[in-house]
Length: 260
Image 1 (cartoon, rainbow, N blue to C red):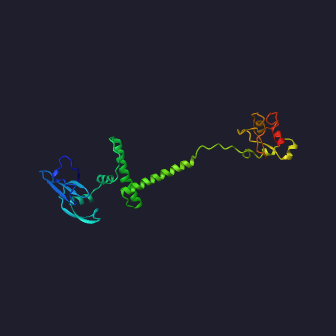
Image 2 (cartoon, rainbow, N blue to C red):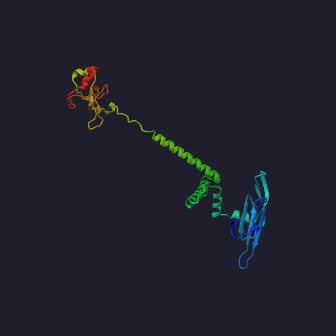
C-alpha cells in the first residue's frame, strides 16, 4: 500500500478524481493478472486529491471530518484504504508528511543546497520536535515548534550581541598611574633634603627600583629641559629632580618649593 502520483507511468487516467469534485468522492479500479495478486487503484478527494495503490480490497467507510467552509463537523464517505493507511503509516511516510508542513521558498538547481535544506527540515520538523514533545510532555505542531525555535535563536543572538558590546565598549585611553600608588612604605621614611625644608612638610620619595614608570621633571619642563626622574614630592604628588641621588646638578625639588 502506498501513494502514487497521477502522472506516474502506467497509472490509469480514468480512475483519477478531478479536483473540482466534492469532498468524499472516490473511484476504484481493479487489476487482475494471472499468477499475481490483485491490485486496486484508488483515487479519492479529501482536502486534496489522493491516489493510492493497494492489494487490500477497499470498502466504503463513513468518517466525521471538520468542514472549514461550514465551520462544523460533517460526515463524508471515504475508501477503507484511507483509514488503513492512516493507522499504519510509519517511517518515511510520516517524515514526508511532517516535512511537507515546513517548506523553504529557496529554489536552486544545486543538489547540495537541496540536500542541506532537506536534512534541515527533517532535523527540525521530525527529530528536534519529537524529542521536545517527549521531554516536556507537549504536543506542539511543526509550525508552532519552528516559530518557537526561531524566537529562541533571535533571543540568544541578541543576548550575545549585547554581551559583546558590554565587553568591548571601545578603545579606552590608558589611565596614568597615580603617584600615591607608586610609593612604597620605605620610600616615605628616607628624607633626602636638608632640615630647613622639613618645616614645610614636603618630602621626596622614590618609586620602586626597577620600575619603568619614570616621569618628566616638572621644573625642568618649565626651563625647557627634558629630564625624567623617579623622585616625587609626597605632598604635591609632582615628579621633581633630586640632586646627588640621580647624578644631576640642578636642585629642581628645592627650586620648585622655594618659588611656591
